[in-house]
Length: 333
Image 1: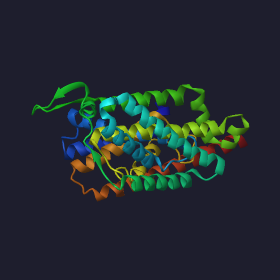
Image 2 (image 1 turned 90 degrees about the vertical axis):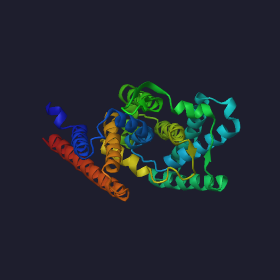
Image 3 (image 1 turned 180 degrees about the horizontal axis):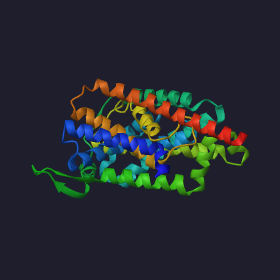
Image 4 (image 1 turned 135 degrees about the vertical axis):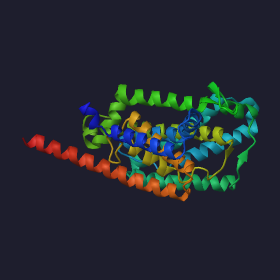
């Protein structure tokens, strides 16, 4: 019990509970099974991006280009669906999107490793390059009118319930895809040498290098994995809205970073977990959904996200400083 009180995730969970109670008191429709399933489905996009961002932050980097990667992969998939939709299936869609995402993510890794440019500068640069090239090629056109089977896939539910008005709802296949990605990612971080290597690199890259870790290989994997999540996320986005636009994901970077940092990951690297990230994503999603249900003007959402980032980064920095001070006192004794 005492251990739980020292865990960052415990306080995030308490905030979620308090927030849920307040929102439900104002608008009882928040705490309904139907709304919770809808919330899970709509959160799957941010949750998928957050998985990749967690890996990058743990490794000691940051990626600002993942929305651009997702937009490029999403647009590529949309063009293929419109031209060759009858000869494609969902497995191929995810394969192409994931493969292209990995390539673009690894391109970031190559620039970061060989040119020694800070990851934030590199990925802001590639973000502009990817967006710029797509805008030129696409001429800003929105794409829609995908094959019927693509729309039908987005409507699949593992099980279906019905509301009082007879409207169907349930656990969406999109949510299940996110859950599967969470389990795979948790296993990599928790139970593999690769996962421990990523934590070691983020904790102290110099020590990790001296210990014999393949820093280039780890950098390739981390940014490639972020690219994979961006590619899968682009398909999820297309499934949710059934359209693809060259600017649909602009500005989503801060939401994802806020969610992951709020869940306990440090911008300095070396810390973070899948359970914490889930809580961070949940809190941001509940904030967004709650503000809508409470009829708060949408402009305030950006203000709230900004405050969340400042508070979570501040708390994270304070905890790190406290741990370092304790370690120094212990070593001196």
